[in-house]
Amino acid sequence: MARITEAPLSLDEHVTAVTGPAQGAIASFIGTVRDHDPSVDGRVTHLDYSAHPDAQSTIKRIAAEVCGDDAGELTAAVSHRIGLLGVGEAAIVAAVSSAHRAEAFDTCRLLVERIKAELPVWKREVLADGSHTWVGIS
Figure 1 (spheres, rainbow, N blue to C red):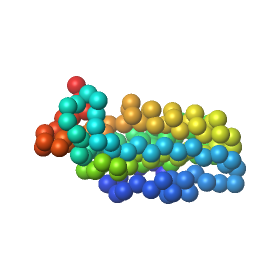
Figure 2: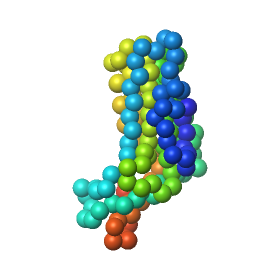
Figure 3: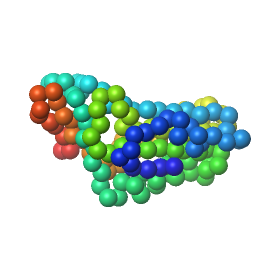
Figure 4: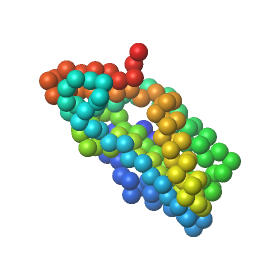
C-alpha cells in the first residue's frame, strides 16, 4: 500500500497491510499536525496539503525502491494525506515489516525521509490570526 488520500489515516490499517508469517518486526511512524512551527510567528491551527498529479506514482515508486530486492522480506505501507488537516490529525502514516527489528526501523526511517524529500506535496500553514504561509516553497 502506497497512496495519497483525502481520507483520515489509520495506523492499524497500515500495520495489517505489512503483517505476515515471515515478519518478526514492524516499525511505524505517524506524522501529525502540530500547533506551532519554530520558523513562524503565531499558532498553527491547520495545514492544507496539496499534491502534484504525479504524487501517487511517486509515493509508490519510493516505497518500491526502499524495499528494493528485499520485497517480501521487507514490506512497506505508507499513506500521505492531502486537504485541510487540523492539529493532531495524521498527515503521514508508514509501517514497515521485516524478519528483524533493525531492518524494520532503518527502512521505515528511510521511507519517511525519502517521502519528505521527494514527494511533490506542499503544505500551507494556516495560523490563528487567519494568515497563512507556504512551507517548502522557495
